[in-house]
Length: 147
Ligand SMILES: *[C@@H]1O[C@H](CO)[C@@H](O)[C@H](O)[C@H]1NC(C)=O
Ligand SMILES: *[C@@H]1O[C@H](CO)[C@@H](O)[C@H](O)[C@H]1NC(C)=O
View 1 (cartoon, protein in one colour):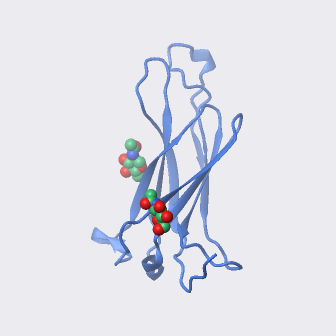
View 2 (cartoon, helix red, strand yellow):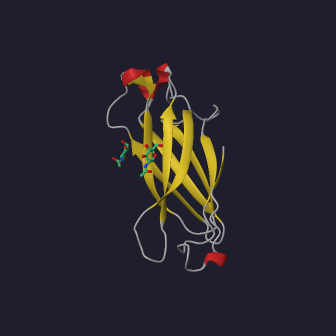
View 3 (cartoon, rainbow, N blue to C red):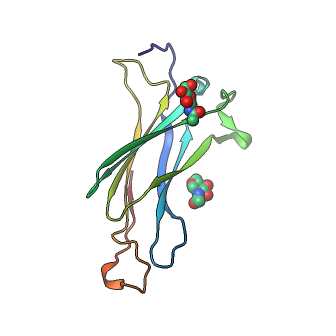
């Protein structure tokens, strides 16, 4: 527990999509591609890392977080061409028919009793990972994402 006089603003945007990985002849496998962009705010100079947590809800409940450290201090609120700083992380293997609650916040975190900004989104995995043509009737491929 450490007090910080200045803490970074919330992420500007958080989004996620499933991406197909290893090519197997019968089954698909997916990882989550989580992307985020930073607020154009002077507090970016305080930003050291972004913490991302994924909670799976369904037949197998699981909670896992990763911490992405920024290797250098941000000198400017934007990157080349005045664009927002954008990052993505590919990881967190996905299982069929689950809900994933993905949340992210910047570090250092807000102090105790202060608002702790974070963003979260939901992602739903497909009902079946068998490739089409093998067992079509059982496989419903549905991707849904809500903000
Ligand atoms: C992951 O998402 C980022 C940002 O949207 C995108 O640039 C990148 O190409 C994606 N990676 C894959 C493997 O789809
Ligand atoms: C990120 O930074 C923290 C604090 O400095 C450190 O404990 C952690 O090991 C770092 N993680 C990586 C992956 O470098």
